[in-house]
Image 1 (cartoon, rainbow, N blue to C red):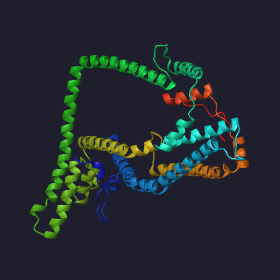
Image 2 (tube, rainbow, N blue to C red):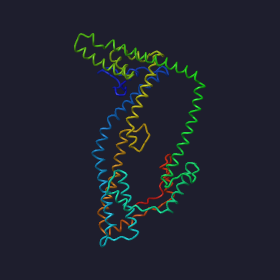
Image 3 (cartoon, rainbow, N blue to C red):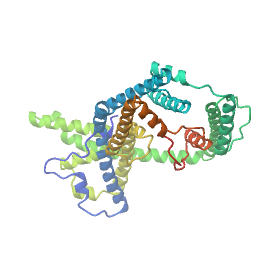
Image 4 (cartoon, helix red, strand yellow):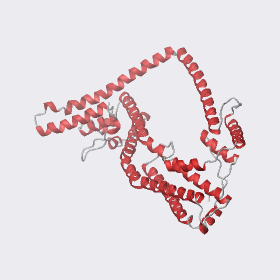
Length: 405
């Protein structure tokens, strides 16, 4: 069955009346009629949003190919050039460019940050070689200290009692152990809840069966209402009995629209076609019987749910691109603004790298830049924030200070 959300909202002839306009000609006389009209408006808005999102990928992909990807390539190239330059300064010190112990430590830290940033985006053999060259072995005392800090942090965050039998040899392995343990506990709880739910289902089995029968009966009535609208339209637009060729072509096009709408359970388009063909008028729409109103409302609810699900699927890649944002109000303009902001930040980083590529070749400017740079050191408080972010569902405290140059 085709998707109702791909159809036009209302089929309104030139000079004719739209379905929303027909409904608006009289004030709703009941809450049921208000709900019906509200659903019509909601579907209209959702279809407009879906159309925007369906049209957006072409513009977004064009921006990626023309703006973002070339900028990313320039940034990767600048990082690699900077890393190679620092390797040259460390490996082949020339007259006037020799660096002291502290300056050397700063250069190594800058180099490793550049290499890690680049390798997180794309693999590069030369950069992997540099990383291996300057990767310092972890001191056993430091490793044990980090493990102790990590265990204390994880115990405080999760409430788990982490003994010495976990078998982890690094903070990352310890976090993975905690994740597995928490997942096992969660699965056990879900299993217990499932067993309780199954018991309740068995207890209310007779009630469920009766409710299901009522739902099936309501579904049959709803389908019959949709079928009645469809049959009236088919009887009016079927082209086979039309002798005039031009009129037969017009009816053939109308018949295709009717079939597409019926296959998609698209009540709004079917009612719009009835309005277009003068099978119904504003008075008819405003005076639906309570039974028809209830059945039409049920169809519209299902149509709206299908439309919202399609909208969510269409938006999902962009929600992911926005850092996993879960916001149904997101618009293509929001994504455009975020993309522009990200590229502006990348431009700033690129300009700084390009300036450093020049400055680091001059001994005086190199020493001046390194004097401004502050070495990063192990800080248990920073590790708490980092680990908590990795574990998820944690709001980091406001940053205390900047430690980068």
